[in-house]
Image (cartoon, rainbow, N blue to C red; front, side):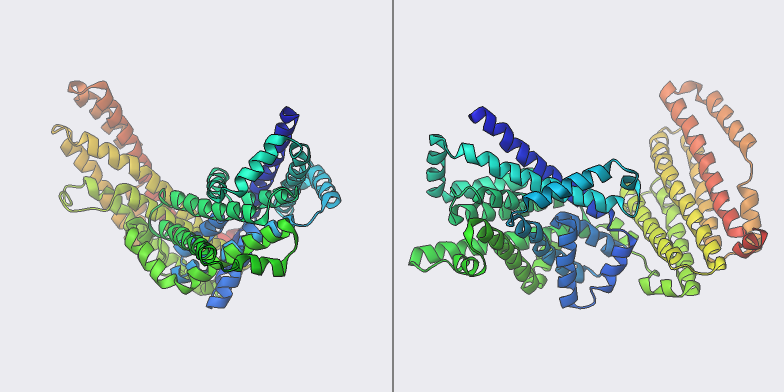
Length: 542
């Protein structure tokens, strides 16, 4: 019988975990521009920020996913870090929604939900940008509860075994073991919500006491905090601070609840947690769901009260990320979208600021800046990409507001220029790397210096043209970046001729360097020509 029960248990757990993951992925797809706009409007006060966090947690069913969405708003300047802490703190309360729903027996409704959404999953509605994510989310909900139903039913035959009764008796006398099980499960599945929903399903068997299940819930909360801490170690800057704030706050809250339980047991007082859940729910399953919600609420309350010291601790443990500072827009602000003239003006200024920073990608290999401390190449490129993304999102919001034809034409032109600048960044990164490697050869150093300096001057000229467009200056820039195929080909022939004393690897790097140089010049010319074109003339021609 054991070999029949184990596949059923594993199948139920697998379906439940798959369903939870499906819900998270589908709802994150729905967290697009409208949700971002809603979030920045709904976080202007602490109470509204807390309510927004609850809503975001309920939508994503993942505190980490909620943290990533909030981080995107912070890095694009749509939300202050202080408000982001509150939103992230209360997102855990929203994740309790599915756990509380799991306490209700909905077998027939679940089958209907899985059947209908499963059929829709293979229909043309699955690919609809409007209906597709919602269908996937509902199919995930149905799969989650179907897995929990299978888990409940599979426990019936298992409870008839003697070993199961012995294991239950042992677990009731070993709360630390149950606590450790909760920690491990939460770290493995990366979700305390999934563990809590599974625990609710176990409660239906009637074999486990509320105290035993509560120990697993506490352990899952600790495991979730530990998992968040580990995820934060792979990040830098504000992202790491935000996740570290969550991990520290939730971990401290669970430890405080465990300490309270230990003190109550030591002095013979009744458990406050049992008193609260017994007044709000009946049965081990319902009480376990309420206990999970109380644990999440306790964490949110502690993080709200101790937000300042926790934020200071996170800031002390995590240094600032220079790339992140670069990615912060200085001119963009969400309210500007309501006025297309103002929106286009601030977008142009932000783009000119980004273009002025692009030449710095070559500073690490320029002779004039040799020995001068430079920001990390990866960090600078990452920051510029983040700034480009912020500009793109701002222009998307402007276009979504349906401005007039002239504003649409200029916004599209700005987006095209943004794409060219991003391509320029991706070209300069390997170019700088190759230049640094080849310039170690004294014979090649003058040639490399000539390429780097000429390209740096060209990019600075382009940045000046974006900041203050001038017809004569743009004409000169377009002439400088015109067809230079013969010049580049002559450079290549010279590289091959003069490179006889160099190995095949150096010659290959030199040829690749000239190709990147040609592409960088072409991209600069393309941006100059986009600036040269008047969007109004393009609109009239169309």
